[in-house]
Every structure is written in structure tokens, then in C-alpha cells.
Length: 254
Length: 254
DNA sequence: GTGGGCCCTGACGTCGCGTGAGGGTCAAAT
DNA sequence: ATTTGACCCTCACGCGACGTCAGGGCCCAC
Image (tube, rainbow over all chains, first blue to last red; front, side, top):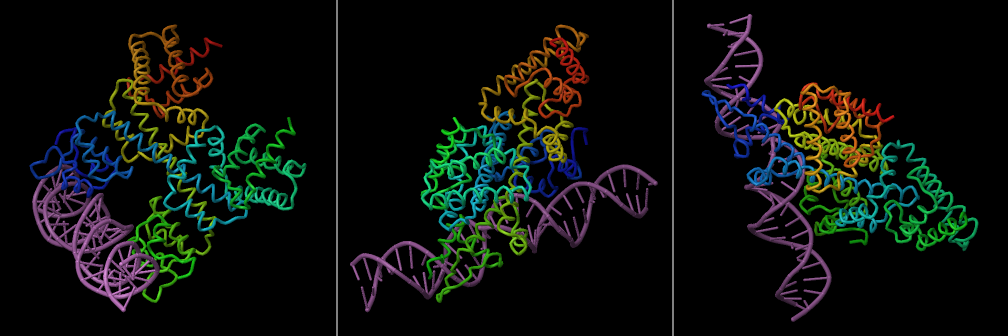
């Protein structure tokens, strides 16, 4: 056995998979050892191990062996193409999962506001439109500075932090809903004060939030398109009310 | 059938899985419909659908049905605990994949410098130490401002961008290697100029990079622990040389 | 020359469903 | 009142990607 040849055990370890897996790949012809010893031992070359590594990578990304086979068979695909492709698949998964995190934050926030999701809402959030919905939300917002900051901060929050955050937000939101239902105009000092509390809460827990940023948020709230808050789901008309209060508060402070 | 009850087809659609999957979950007792119609039809309640949704979510995160069963069975776990847990699993996957992207960028950069990885390097990068290596690299660096910026920028690069980036970096690295091999001291103007070109390249393609930041990078390079560059793998001793040149260049400019 | 570690080839088991076959159910349209 | 067609039921076998023995060779060190 030459120096740059490996038996199954070694090759398997190098590729980070089991011996049985190599046997399987040999059986189905996906990756076969370039040589056999006189005793019938499989001998994998460096190139073979590289192929195995590639397969393992694609597998971890969830591709089926058939797909991988056609990728490997395509002689037009260079090593760099493979790396590019793997990178794409990875970033795809990352943005998908990031979108799912947004959905969870959505539901956590909804619960923070003391509202469980109805079956209809769950349908929209977790049902068939799940990915499409989450992805569009992530695209609308996902590249903004605020989103990145929020992701970074919230990733570190403990369960206690979340509990506190939610409690505070729930108090603000309940007060806003009460104000609206009691006929207090959104331009009243009370409503504006609540808007200001909301701004401070956002700045404290999620991301920097001056009055200009807060105004932008308000528009998203009104359109019920902001991941993490759907005021109309709490009380119909509340999103418009919150929007108006935030704008009034921003006007007030200059 | 009451209004808040659904037959298999409907329940399956709400949960975003196949009918057969619901049959299977029923068979193994993971999620069973709370009622059957007189004709033997499975009737799923809202609560059942919620459980199904949860299972689907955990499945997408790669958990086995057995694990999910024990999670669902644990009556100490509230709805919010589930959401928290799912969020953790997601961010785990995200950082794992982000680490894998770093590894790919590593190899792309190595190729950019005109150097294919040797089997030994591949072993370190893709072999059994893969996850540990990538994860430790990500932890060392993963929370820094520079990393985030780099991720954000590079995510948008086209293949052409990468090609250009790599070409430029390869030219700089080759020049540095030549300088070292020809005995030019790292404190010479030529080496310092190359360090400066490297700094500008980094600032242009990856993240803001003043001289102080560049110095920090230099230390990582010297320790060969920086994802994306391993100068000693190109030419032994080059990492120290690059480090010294960067420091000299930083000294020079202030 | 023998023990322990590696390798071989079957071949059956597992998990999470997919995919029929053969047959009831139900509401609407004829 | 029946027929149509969409839905539902229960077997039951199939599949992908291996895991896991069982029974047997190879190889090298002591």
C-alpha cells in the first residue's frame, strides 16, 4: 500500500463518515476506491478521499445520493464550482432558518402582548405559507441595520430576559389598547407618552431607535407586515392607532 | 363534526405534512386524533393540530420522532419553553452553517492565493475535527463587528466578485511570499507597502480595517487561527513575516 | 504461531415515511 | 334515489441510507 492510499477505516475517518457508508457508496457506485489490494482490501487515493469529503458535505446539506451523483459526474463542474455551490446551499439554509427564527420571535412577541395565536393565524404562520411568508418578511426587513442588531442582541437573551421583555411590552400594549377603546385620541399626551415608552422599550431590547426610525416602524405596524408585532390581531384598528400615536409623539419631540 | 375539528386531509394541510405522516404518527402513538367519527374518520382538534405543527417544526430541525415524543410528553415544558427551545436549535444550526461558510471561504481564499489544500490540511478542515475547528473559529471571531460586516458583504458577492477578490489577494500574497523568500526584511518599505495593500484589500472586500484592526488581524494570522487565511500553509514562516510587515506598516503610519 | 486489530462479504434491521390495493363514507348533482 | 367523485379507512409492501451482526480472511507484532 502506497503512502497516499488509505484503507476503509482511515478513509472513513478522514471523510468523517462510517465504514459502512463507504461500503454503501462502493456498492451503489457513487464513490469507489481506485484500487483493491491483492487481499481485496479497498484502497482509497487522495482524490477518492476528496470525493468522499465532498459527498459528506453535500449530504450534511440534505442532498440525496442521486443528486450528489449527478453533481460529481458532471465534469464541467470544477472544484471551485463545488465550493461556490456548497456556499450557496449553506446561505440558503441560513436565511431559511433565520426566517424561522423571525416567525418564532413573532409568536413570542404575540404572547408577550398577552395574545395567543388563533388557529387562523397559526395557519398563516406555520401552515403551507410558512416559508413564503417568513421569507418575504425576512426580505422586507432582513437586510436592515435594525434587524441585524436585533438578531445580535436577542440571541443572547436568557429566558428571564425574554420574560421581562414580554411583560413590559405587554403592559405598554395593553395600555395602548385601553386608550384606544376608551376613546382617547392618539394625539393625546397619554397616547404619546405610551408611544414614547414603546420607543424606549424597543431601543432598550431590540435596536437603536430614534424618532425617525420609530416612524418607519410605525408604518410597518400599520401594514401589519412587521415580524414580531401584529396589532390588528390584538384589537382591530389598534395598528392604525399605534401608528398615529407614534407619529404624534415624533412630531412633539421635534 | 364540530367546527373546530378537522379530518386528516385538512389537519395535514394545516400542519404542512402528508396524510401518510399523520397516519404514521397515529400508529406509533406520537400524535393521535382526540376523536374518531362514527365511520372511523380521524378527527383532529385545534390542540392536536398545534401538536402536529410542533412535531413538524422539530422534524425540520432534524430531531428524531423519539426525541420529539419525549419533549411532547414532558408536561413541565410549556408552549413558551417549546418556542425557546426551537429558537435555540435554530440559532445552533445557523451558527453551525455559518461556521461551514467560513470553512468554505477559507478554502476559497487558499485557492485565491494559488494554493490547493494538501490532504493533511483537508483532514484538519474537513475531517473529524471539522465541526470543532469551525466552531472554535466561529467562537473566537463570530461575535465581532468585523465578522458580521464580512458576512453581510460577502453574502452579496457574485462569482465574478469572488474571482476578482481572489485574484487581487493572490497577487498580494504571492508578492509577500516572494519578498520573504528573497530575504527582504518585513520592515522594509516594500514589505510595508504590501501590508498596506493587504489592509486596503481587506477594507474594500471584507470589513472596515484601520491600522489598529489590522494589527489584531496580524496576530490571528501569526497564530494561523484566522478562518480564511493560513499563511504558514502557503509557505512556512510566512505568517510571522506577514505579521511583522503589518505591524511595521501600522507603526509607520502613526 | 498466535493474538488482536483490521479487513471482507452477505444479509437482515431500522427509521420515516411513500405508494399502491381494495374497499367504505359523504355531500352534491342528477 | 341513485350515482358521482372527493374524501376516508386499513393492510401491506417498498425505499433510501445506512446500522448492525455473523462468519470468515489478512497482517503484523510479540
